[in-house]
Image 1 (tube, rainbow, N blue to C red):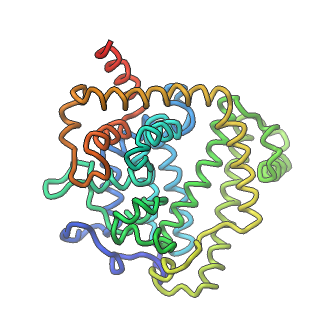
Image 2: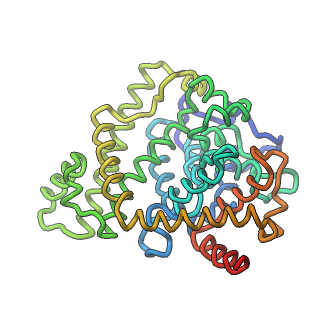
Length: 378
């Protein structure tokens, strides 16, 4: 790792863990966080959770696991360029979707609807719950006992109601302050990754075309750049070069804009960034507008495509049906799952238990459970 800047998170500046542990002679605190995340069962399950296309739709489409790895790669690149803590950035990137439901945003929407009378469902808050409570790997405590900084970065969004229950971790949402710079890097790396890689998956699926995408300025610019350099390039190589060029352009713009912001704000410690009203790690206004245009295109033409919407409706039905059946028939829950009821539950015990169980499912396991419980109640 390159030398850390004064405003970067370090072992010396960490606010520590919830449960005191001896430090490791071989690894930094944030390396340990990263390793615990990689070895967690929740991380392994991301392999079979939807990004945009259901896991069984094709082997070439991205899953939550491949997305998280791609976010991590982009995040580490940015962190190194800004002399931030790469290990912390990587830990946050790898953990940011641990609480995501099966079936992507459709599953999240359905579970939020099911929990509307019990606090709703926020996947960032669920990711925090996974690492704080639900993982069962250690003898002395529940969860992974991650550092404050990693947990801070995982909690990208949080309602004020829930923030008030989180103590120090929720204060920034109440005071409208920012997280450490590494968390800000992970946040924007996530946006860069899913925008650009959803373009790739959308083209692979045939639901959008390159000609349609060229209505977006950022796509058109990089299409012209690539075809001017390699006039005969086409197919997968053309798409890959365009996406690679876009990501490089976005990351370069982000690093240069963020360096200017760091200098302008005269950041001298990790807490200086936390005390700001606005984020420091950002794209230039021009690049942000181009990136937003692409995001809106994908929302209209890919995420709301008839085929994707039909998959989403089917997925929502499965999640809602599972929730209703388990609430009415808690005896159908596996015995191991019922042992995870915690005094830390933010809702009634049965609703929280069912929510935790469904949120932890992979796509294919949710479909298998759906078939099982439907047969049981018929």
